[in-house]
Length: 594
Image (cartoon, rainbow, N blue to C red):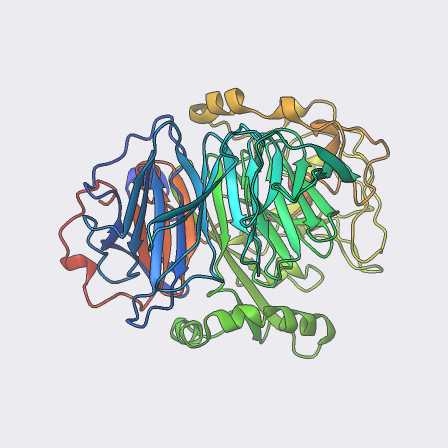
């Protein structure tokens, strides 16, 4: 299935794709864009972003959509799989001078049919609080740019709070604000609150309470995105230095870190139960990180350029008590299950997963669905299955989308194989396990650097590996000898190797020295080699736009994507197509559909 769309079909824009649940269809009549529907000239502008909120409207049209295109910000009623709202009649429209919106976030806690609180971050560093229903501009934060002069990269309300919000900047700093407080007329003075491995947190030192309440300095280079865990207690940050850092937000403590294969990390997302984090970035990979074990458990290779957004699908993530070698039911059953239970399935994942570890007689089959979009204009969907999550089980032979190149960490005392036949494609690959000398000749899709013997300690399943002595030159790395000439200039121009931090956040004590560089993190638990973790293949990988993709959001009836031209597309889930059939609609004038 992953091979679909290969070869000469790669230049076609796809309007539908099929997974085991059924067919996802692009609804051309549900497309949102600027009112004139003219493709936006995206050169030099900030990425198009989309935010949703439900205002609990009695009419049943409670969903609202906000998106930015260039200097413009739009606010519409969102109708999902039904025909889009009249684009010539936005609820609110704003055009900014001298600065551009870069990101935005609704406060879901306070939203009503009469009022919503929308935060908007800008390219010059300011943050605006507006109410697009009342059409009031409430407050402007960092107005004089005394707090930070760099571009706002991400803004989010603190979960469960009506007044606290967090803002990250291209400077690598993050600030905690309270909407009730002022920013003051002078530059803030700071006092160190806590310092750790390549991060520090300061409080604002002043006689009267003022913004910002806290200043976080994280890593080297821009802090590209952050995301709160589902319970709101932890914060995952991805930076241009290539590190994922996960903090206990209230305790202001570092929980764990991960390093990209190379280049900066651009996006991050939590699984519905908070047990896994997926990050994507300039290495063209999606990397799955275990929150509990603080280690990389899988990588996904499907994109041909930088990955701009990763997101978990809460409505397709499933937990089933069944034979682990089978998918849960037929396509019809699966659709019915998803339709009936929706988010409840995702919310119950955590408790069911804990059962999984204690129940041996009837194991729980777990599948996490997540998606990614990239600058290669492609949408990829991925399934994270129990053969990756629980590698000590027999590998599933029904998974055609997972290329498990080797066994992951075996439980203490288990038999270690030196080579195994890959169940998914019939090829033989070396099962590289801690404690076994690896022979490069048995690794058909890896680089040919020599490897050192590593050791495994049964400390809660966390791999503490020594620095691989064979790492001599970072430049010798390649993704299965793949050379993407087309993107080579971008990678060189924007490469973040110069910004690699001088200190590694070695929560797992994987490094004997306190200072490190990118080459020395390779082969450690911070950044395992490609052959040392399972390599996922996408369920689907489809070109769905002409311009780079900047948005991927999973909703109950559909998934939403957007490209840099300013077109926001709705894809109906299987069986969720509205009364208006997309086949009967006139072809979209946007040029994004073939």
